[in-house]
Image (cartoon, rainbow, N blue to C red; front, side):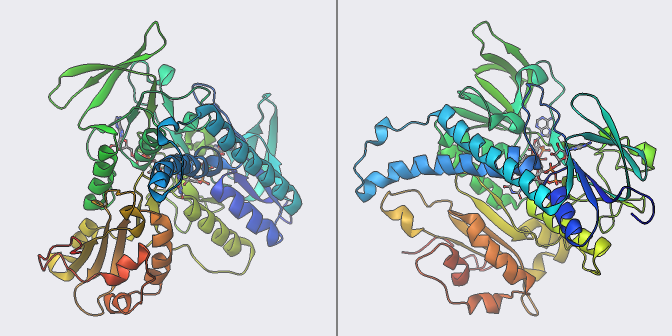
Length: 486
Ligand code: FAD
Ligand code: NA7
């Protein structure tokens, strides 16, 4: 490059954010290299190019969720006249795992080919800073290669944490291992009640495994409380055993190979249970320490190791960051991708467009899914005051639930809006089938400034579950019963 560096952009981390930025940057004429390296999990799981989402996140998770939904659908099919015997239906874990892993491997391959075609140079090496423009990449064989670049993008994401208790690292697994687990998980304890814990417990229960979820406090911290409770109650009704306000103390391996778990309840009482699998989903650690950030003068948030960037720029002017390593930003694939693309356009195109991290929609793929965009009821009230917020809500009965007589008890929609002025919609929440598909379009509407009158004047599509949003009229303030009257 003109300043004597080998590359215009060096990306550390070939996941959602890093690859999006790299591809966009080469398209704009920059010379780009990507380093990606996966350190094996404690039980030795490893994977290919593409980062968390493709290998051990969104994609295998959605496939296993889909497998669980299909199991549910098989049981429903008989009520619609399909001739089958639901009693003989069971999952073949090895076959499921193989199908999921085959898909993941095909994505790894397509990703590699795409990088080659687009002329992004890819190196399977673990990067660390030598200085603000120099990164050393270490290969699996221990060989070192030195890279210099004008700009450096940190997109290293994170990895699951383990609790500091005996046996956790030796015998526990995490989301990094579950999607490629050699043996069927069997009776499983999921520790942690964030969205990853709930999703894993949800699909394992749906696949027919005896599943317990242990929460040290509440489920889905940060999400709308009422919606979070609906999700958890529904899972409980479907057979997931919930233990609240409890913590694992110790895991030991019995002679028969099963795991003996000591846990303590809220009264300090110790209990013991035996499981085949213990899966920790207690949050994720950013992989920034390994970067030797001090060599580049890069500052991290001390408590979390995250990067406090302004418009994706760190405290070092030529060092940028996108994705899960960013402090207080949504940890979602499309967020990482969008921020990465926009950053590349600002650096190598003539763009000035900045990433907008507000009103990003998301979905928890629990057995009954939960999709949302914008503010929770609590956040809206905290921000504007109770008097200024109107909450519209309704329970509804999905048409597809009638014939199999599925319980619609927790199918529920909620719209959070300003009470006065233009009655702007601040948040939308949906628990029910296909929640992600339902919420995505409304996220666009909110970007366009959706108001309650506009929502009410939208004609629904019948019979769908998404149309429930266009029919809302009951406010919490009115005290009217939000249960369907028919
Ligand atoms: P990553 O995708 O994690 O990529 C970082 C890459 O950098 C990795 O390959 C890593 O090995 C590599 N790396 C790290 N350090 C170095 C180094 N020093 N040198 C070289 N390479 C390095 N998001 C959604 O939007 N929807 C979902 O449904 C969803 N489900 C999820 C389910 C699970 C179980 C998990 C764990 C996550 C899920 N996510 C989901 C979150 C999503 O996967 C992340 O937000 C996204 O992958 C973040 O992208 P990233 O680019 O920041 O990092
Ligand atoms: P989250 O969303 O950070 O949730 C972690 C969960 O684990 C949460 O329920 C925590 O309870 C619980 N937790 C945290 N530490 C412990 C310990 N030591 N013991 C038991 N339970 C614990 O993590 P996820 O893995 O679901 O998701 C990771 C990120 O990916 C998340 O930020 C998403 O945005 C994307 P708490 O509520 O703190 O009491």
